[in-house]
Image (cartoon, rainbow, N blue to C red; front, top):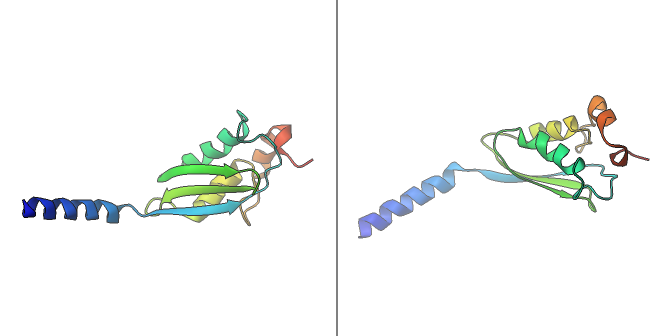
Length: 112
């Protein structure tokens, strides 16, 4: 019985060590007051970020104007996440929004 518990412990530790989940919070400019509910705004951002391998969760905080991404550090990195956000038409920290993607945003998502 002790051997089984020992082996199971090693397996669990091995699985935990394999995944290197990290979070990055990216500052952006969210001008829309309804991005969380909007059928265009939030899905636009999450779609571009979710296309990266290793993305586990994407959360928007419209009041703080941040996007927090939980990801597997072995599969992606903060720079790639910022680029993906930029390609959705939004600034991502120091990475400016892709001009073509910004032009395609709904009017409510653009700076007034």
